[in-house]
Length: 360
Image 1: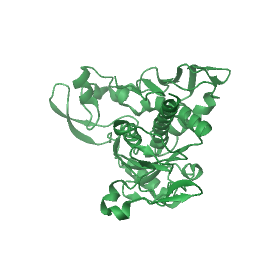
Image 2: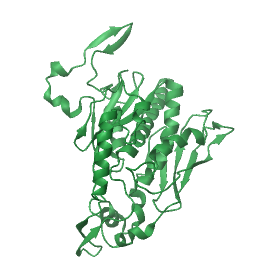
Image 3: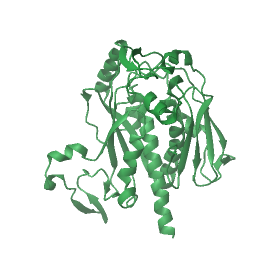
Image 4: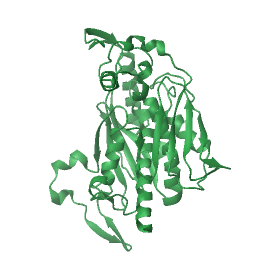
């Protein structure tokens, strides 16, 4: 029904923004992986609200609890259930939204589809749903790192019109986490933070781009035709709240090149097939080629702004609505761990599918 993702490594997220809590069930994680809450909490801390001056001030600890699927610090191979309680709901800030549709939100479409919606905080359409993804992604990242030596990371490369070029093979987690906007270019990060703060003061919002990267992906992950690795990555990224665009490797920039200019020439490097350039983004024919996988995800400006806007109410009557409550002026800093999580979930699922194929 659209709440589950993956085939062999499959997750189902649950919960609403202003309900008792949110969480995830992870099914298909191999047994005997060392796992505890301490492996998951750091990524949730990077995703949580209230962590800096440029994100929503909602105060949540987002403390994770593993309810099932582990014993004596190791996975059992059975479903892993995890929960995070909601502790700082202020539903009264959304009371006007009970009868009015917020511009560019999912209020109208959910009402039209289901005839009912959880209007406080947006229910399932809230970014709090991504807690389950990030928790599951932390397990996937650990499995990828320990079993296949794959490193998954992401960073902000653009906020509105402030953009930097980042080498997918060179930036580090330390550089990304050195500032609150999570851009590895320190000088650009200062300007990005200033822009976000000014935009927030004006009651508005801005969008931008997150670069997703996976280093050390072996050759052969991905499936033909409909389950191409980049196709599953695109679906994963476009399932994130506020995402509006995806491109991989040279992406849309490749249209300005000829085929000769764009092609990644092959070379034999110490007995291994490598490419001189990596405009393919580490994937060819839907299958990983052993080079770094990298792509970009575009996120729109947050839809909630603190200005009066035209809308309609549940009867169809025209009216106006001003944004209230606590909201991010820019999703990008908190989107970084979300992009990492979805990348890891796609890769670990394809890794297990690849191994299963060769065990047949």
